[in-house]
Image (cartoon, rainbow, N blue to C red; front, side, top):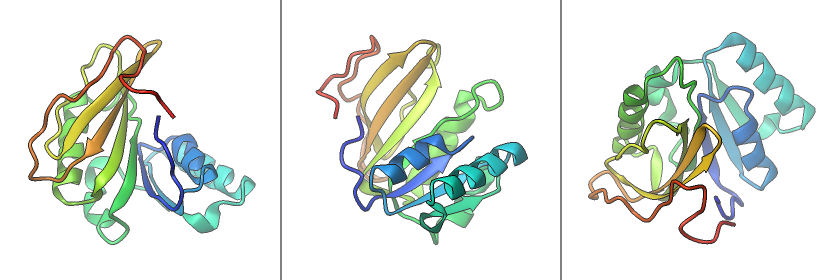
Amino acid sequence: MLGDLTEARVLDLYAGSGALGIEALSRGAAHAVFVERNRAALIAIEKNLRALELSARATVLPFAVERSLGRLGKLGPFDLVLVDPPYADVPAGVVARTLSSLLAEGLARPDGRLLLEHARRDSAPALLGARLDRTRRHGETNVSLYDVVGASSPVDEGEHSDAGEPSRDAQ
C-alpha cells in the first residue's frame, strides 16, 4: 500500500510499540521518529529497536503527539507519516486538527504520504494539504492513505473504497 520506502524519513505518531515505524525501517527507510507519551510503550519501542539493531536509525520522543509538533521541525520534513491513535483516548477531531497543523507547518514533504488508522465508524477526515487516495477496511479499523500535496493546495476526496478493496493495485 505504501510502495517503496528506500531512504524515506518516517514519522510514527502515537507509536505504541513502534511496529509501524519499525516496519518502515525494515523496508529500507533511512530514519524514523517515534512519538509516544505512554511510558510502557516507550520502553517497548526502545526494546524493539535494540533487539532489531535499528536504534541508530531512530529517534524516540516521549511527548504527547498534540504537543510535539514544535519539536519535530528540526527532524523533518518527513516522506511518510504513520498515525495510529488510541481511538478511545484521542477523539477523531483532535487527530484531524493535529494532522492539519502538521501539514500546515510543512512537516510532511509535498510529495509524501500520510497513513491514518482510524475506527471504522469514523470517516477519513478531510485534511488541508492532503488528498485522500484510498481507504481500506480491516475489521473494525479503517486505514486511510493520503497523498501530501502541500499546505496551500485544495483538498479533494480522491479515489477510495471503504469496502476493503483498494482503488488501485496495492504494492
